[in-house]
Length: 125
Image (cartoon, rainbow, N blue to C red; front, top):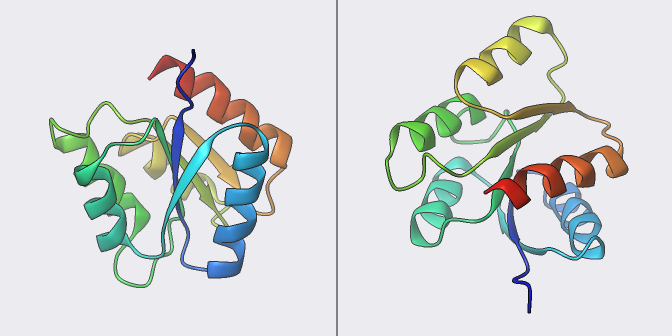
């Protein structure tokens, strides 16, 4: 029996976090949520997910910093990070990839594209 991949959704807007979780669950994945960066780090370190969907503008820290910290930690460096953000400028996109993101999606995002990215990278994890 195939194991269901778990997705960590890091989004400070609780309503949007719930919407993303429902999209992901409808595609057959399980989800966990974090509403800020410190919670995200704790969740990943306690039990690394198959993939992380990471907002960049969090109340306590930047998603860039979270991604960079996860990539520097041997225990979490293998977890793929997809940035899902309202920041739609080239500099932010380049910074996202520079700190280790494997994909960069801007809000409003296409739910099908999001699921395709999860399927592609969670399977490789």
